[in-house]
Length: 147
Image 1 (tube, rainbow, N blue to C red):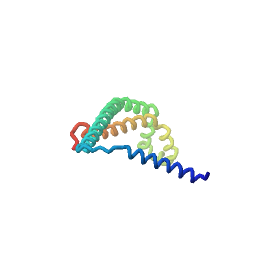
Image 2 (cartoon, helix red, strand yellow):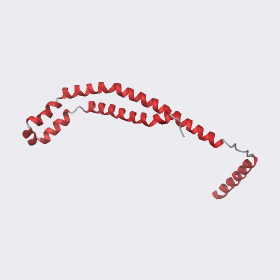
Image 3 (tube, one colour):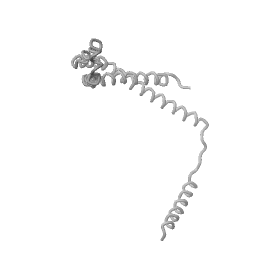
Image 4 (cartoon, one colour):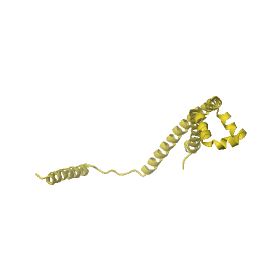
């Protein structure tokens, strides 16, 4: 038997099955307020999602706000321990020497920069701003009536 013959046989059987299935289904009348109830449930779900997003954003904002001060302390400790400020002050005191050895000086600045502390403080600030944006966007939807 050829491959197309098998496919056409399966297609014929399935078409007959679907016809029998749809013949046995009885169509009932749709209520008049079906659209209103569907739209109302969509609005309720949208409001619930906004409330959950608002609660999550408030908690993320709170955690990042509590982590802000330790991140700043960590950053300032790392800056003072690495000697970064001393190297930066050389720009103002010995600018002519720095211009002569600017390539070595730029590498020295990059090596003394505390990257982990900088990343931690930037992550906390980014989390603060993102959570604040989420709070502001979900507040109106979560707590006021939707039209």
